[in-house]
Structures are given as C-alpha cells and as structure tokens.
Image 1 (cartoon, one colour):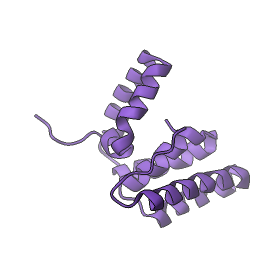
Image 2: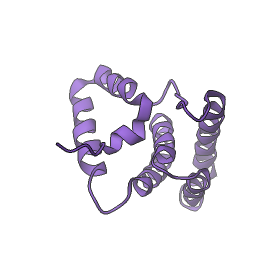
Image 3: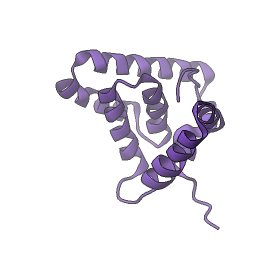
Length: 132
C-alpha cells in the first residue's frame, strides 16, 4: 500500500473535506473529474516538484482571473514549501504579461491569506470561506 500523500492532501491541507464537499455540491461528476484527473493524475505526475506546480498554478489562475481557485492555490503553494518571497515572485512575473490590475488583485488575496494565517497561528491553516 502506498502511504505517499496525494498532492491534494498537501495543497488543500485541513480544508480538503470542505473543498471536496463544495465541489460535490456543485456537481458530483465535476468533483470526481477534478479530484481524479487534476489532482490524482496531473498533480501526482513526476517531473516537477509540487511547489513548482503550485507556483505555476498561481500564475495561471491570475491569468484566468479566478480568485476563489487562486486563494486555494496560494495556500497550496505555501503548504507545498514555497516561501512568501517565492509566491510574491511568481505573482510579480504575471505583471508584464497580464497587467497590473490582475496582479494587484492577486496580491490582495495573498495579503488576506497571510493576515488570516497570522491571526490563526502557525499550527492552524487560515481558511477563506469563498475559496474552492
């Protein structure tokens, strides 16, 4: 039996049950496809470490303008070992390609997460109610 956690276990952390329940409430088939393909197939593939995958996901979600999903993956990048400076660097890389408004919005989400995490302490994850 493989005891290696799925990428989603790290990315979602303590929020996993809530996130998966929210997706199931939207549509059970959608939830299944996201979990089994996006996380348990694509994210679990070798080639890139999870931190790098999450930093890429953050940049892609900035480009799509998807705040709820970006909240999840900002936290996921930090859970996967990215430093705050690395997350900030990934977001800043978006500015020349996507423009400042999307990057400012992304930094606001990061600020909210870091502020919430500071209030809850390092042993608890800061949940954001509207995230995926």
